[in-house]
Image 1 (tube, rainbow, N blue to C red):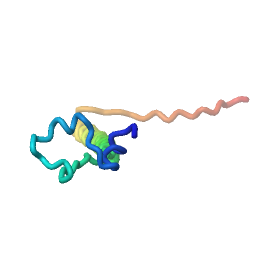
Image 2: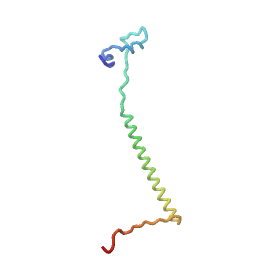
Image 3: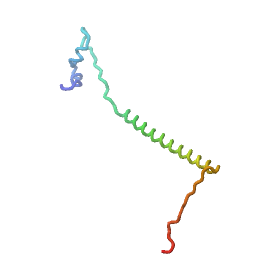
Image 4: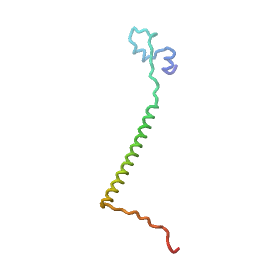
Length: 96
């Protein structure tokens, strides 16, 4: 019996636990409860939810900034405070 779990299954009480039992206690009536093994499922799901939420928030912020910028440009160009042109020059050459 190498592991404490093996000792507990066999009904033996490890020495460190035996010292914690109050004197006069019937050791045949002692029940040792072990902590359940930890699960990593919860923290992994929480991390994925936080990452997805962060990406969603960044996308919403980028969309809002784009809409606000487009509205600002539209208002400024309509009032004459700003003008811009889009130059679509032809790339074909004549004479060849």
